[in-house]
Image 1 (cartoon, rainbow, N blue to C red):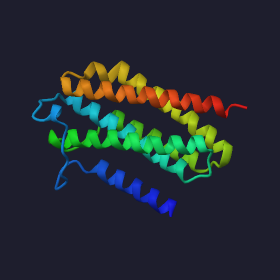
Image 2 (cartoon, rainbow, N blue to C red; image 1 turned 90 degrees about the horizontal axis):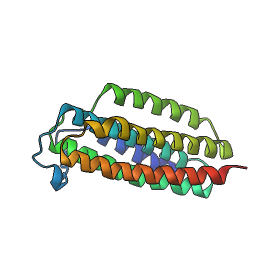
Image 3 (spheres, one colour; image 1 turned 45 degrees about the horizontal axis):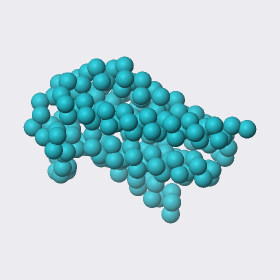
Image 4 (cartoon, rainbow, N blue to C red; image 1 turned 90 degrees about the vertical axis):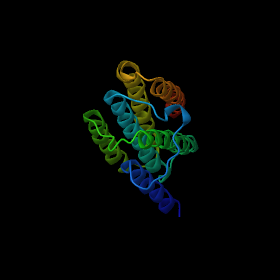
Length: 187
């Protein structure tokens, strides 16, 4: 039952993430309605969407393994938080009539996420716990660095800046949580 529920969640997220126009009715946050954004800001949304989708998928992999309570709780937390952020990205994209959220960086991040999923998929028990949390620390640190060194510099409109500031705060929280779990997993 748990496996089928998580597979449904993954399928739903991937489908949602790949659908940016059509009959979906997203209610975009008020601060992004009727806002002109730059192509760089479209790239920001694409990059954040891929990061969110990757974190959700990796967390779903963790939630289908026999993992420690701390790792399980963290995986469920990430599914909720990244799912919420991804929904917000898609609402913004839909409201601004983006046809695609695709960039070279987004493609690179997707490849890296797929590689991490393949590596983690073959691990079990404590080996999985350690590798998963190490990947979460590395991934969230990388996302934080990306936001700080590239994405914030590209953000021009207040709505996108605000979205990035909120996303950055969540990524920082996730990173600190992952580091704490990482320390607890040390022998």
